[in-house]
Length: 347
Image 1 (cartoon, rainbow, N blue to C red):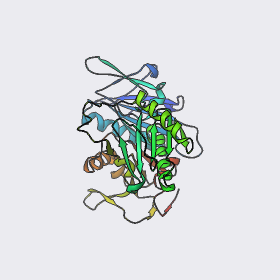
Image 2: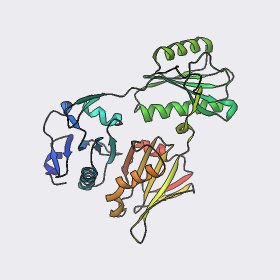
Image 3: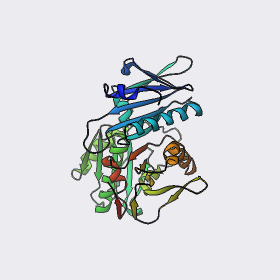
Image 4: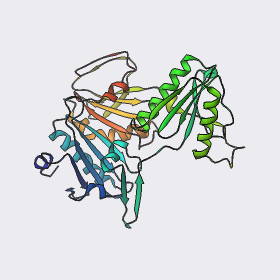
């Protein structure tokens, strides 16, 4: 990165560079009043005082109108900055309109965009519309999202109500223990992946009828639902992300310098210093683990490798992607690989 990085970082905890086709510009204005240009990239650097885990975050923000040349410049900037910081943090890919709560929290919980026509679009802190998920005990705890009007709850099932600041888990009086566990699992996924931990989980095991009426009333008053085509649309839709399983892939460079992504079927893995692993956490988020001496060819191409993977798997390209360096993994990474039976690693 063609900047005086050392002098800047020694003074500030938050730094932002705008990226265009010619290079990088360190921004001096009030970051809380910053307008993100939809045609540019931005490199946002946040420094932490941490003894364990990541010591900094680097966010690569990509606008909806950004061309490939600017994106490549942004990727190079992240690579150089991470190298300068001795690979002791994590970096994240942020897509306009799908920014992580961690990113937005740097700007008083709101950001604004500006396009080439100077049209300003405000983006407040995302708040999930009220939703209801059903765990069907008679169908092997299959998870669906209810998209029709709800009259009554099935007392054999478990329902998870996403009510914004609260996630309520209604365990039916005839539901099974396994479905209770699945309900907590779903609640924690929503809490961590969608709300960055910023909500509380309420478990309802008693006073079923009273709580049923209370939850349904809250849901009907706030849910964003259209009943115009209720005779055509199904009452429920299969919720793939809560039924998906986690997978791990080994990213390697072949002799002809082509990069190959292979799924690891075995549950016992060695996280060696020269390896790179991609962890798909139930189609909710992607973790990329980078060893200390992983081939430079992989490090420099890692953003493009991820985009290639997302497109190949037909996953949304805005899916959250967190890149972690060996020895500075966040606690959420350990949770993401908890499905492995065992592993050997330097961390």
